[in-house]
Length: 73
Image (tube, rainbow, N blue to C red; front, side, top):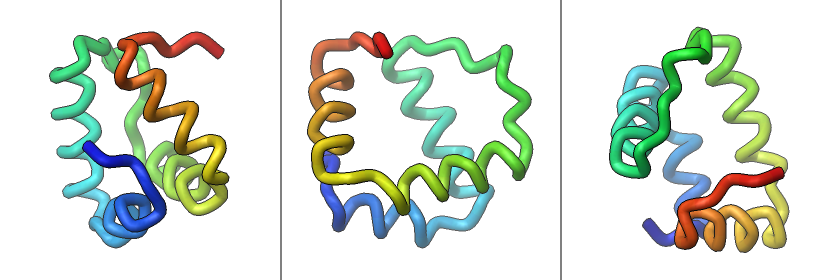
């Protein structure tokens, strides 16, 4: 997945059901266990806010983490 501003806008245009389905698929594909997260609409609102406010540097960092399979803070 190409992670850039255009992709973020596409993600933000998804409805909650579509966005949740994409999150679930990506988590499965990357071997992430999201069972400990509550996954409610409040979480999706926070995710949408984070996507809207992501800088180009944030996108580069996330893309590198996805490529390497690591998510250290």
